[in-house]
Length: 268
Image (cartoon, rainbow, N blue to C red; front, top):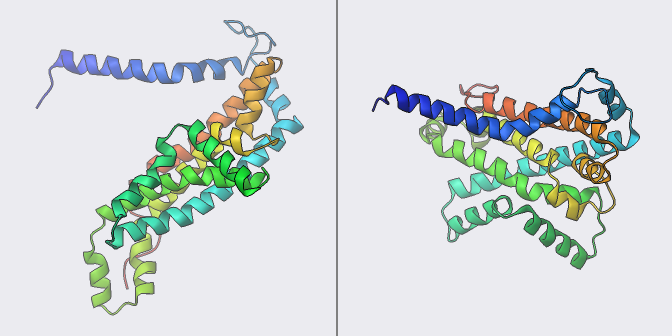
């Protein structure tokens, strides 16, 4: 059905309004990050990148960045392995409670972060596990698994089983079929899931608050600096960096998720 011109214009205006509503606060922070003054005033009279240098040379910021990167990489690695395996298990095999397991896998990301964080904190305290980098990684992996699982199982559901059956008919072993047929088909979904999981882990603050103990990841450093109110220009510069580091994997994931594969061949 073809929409009338007034309807198309109304939808376009509504879409622009929603985008502005979502991104206007981020644009304001990016704008003030380039102001020279310690006081945020509009308009900015002197543009500078001074505060980016201050943030980069701040040992607290660099330590928080390094901790965030380590937690993100390891949580993504765990999520990549477990999320892919459980997606294969649920897609390839029929067993009692399969739908229930699918629902339980989604719960950590569907529930409010404070619920997941409190649950993890109680579990660690009960087990006598001290808060450290490892507890942050475990906490992040709980919801990163969902992202990888959703990407992989969605691709598996769109993949025809005839390719695998043809591979078996041509004499390929299960390992050859997995390497030459299955992996090239799933490659973009796996990589996209990993990138999205890393982006989700990198800027997570609520779960990290309950699992980090005395350690500061970059989002926690930002939260603490905002409460003190004495480092706002530096905070704005750090936030711009977080936005960039979060958006890059999301954009890459969006571009490659519709591709046919990152490499390999389906020929036997």
